[in-house]
Image 1 (cartoon, one colour):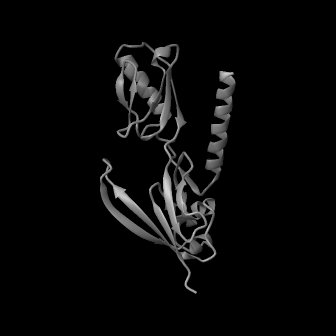
Image 2 (cartoon, rainbow, N blue to C red):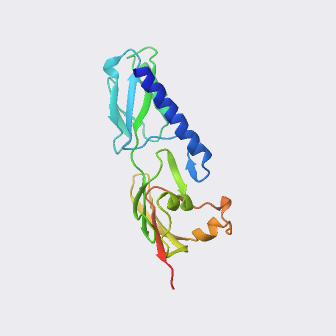
Amino acid sequence: MVRYKLAIFIIFIFFVRNIFAQNPFILLDQGGYKVEAGDMLEVRVLNENECNVQVKINPNGLIRLMYIGMIQVGGLTIQQIEEKIKVNYTEKRIFRNPTIIAKITSYTPKFVYLSGSVNKPGPFALPNEAIAISIGELINMSGGFSPIANKSKVSVTRSFRDKNGKLIETKTFPVDVDALSKGKTHIKGQKWWVYPGDRINVTERLF
């Protein structure tokens, strides 16, 4: 039963990855998804049940493992995490050649925020493994523009932070979504990318 559920999970992940990969309006990290604070991990050491854990990555990107203690995993892919844990167990002479199996059991939600003349204002969660989404696709997925929306005057407000999370500056960018959808801009691929934390506001048309 466990193997059957695992097989179903793997097929599901493969299916979702293929959907994302075929969607040119969703941007994925080409090096693979990198875990971040709030993600839940399952880490197993084969045949060493006492080392198996379900753990949430803390705000500093750390998790606690048996015999190792705290270890930095934030910003790493699953494959990098498995290798790092293996090296730690080996170098500390805890296990000679351990097999590490790690997987993400849940993702921390990554939101963008929509306001103004859209059909569904409020927070919108990006697909789990997406690092960005085109503004046109975002608005479509969240219900589309309202009938009185000014599609040529959309603003995106973005906060820039340093590596410690301290706010550096906030900028607002004007975006002509109508021109993007018609291919009438000089923007490469006619895509303007929206990132987690961005705030999108759509103004009303003047009648």
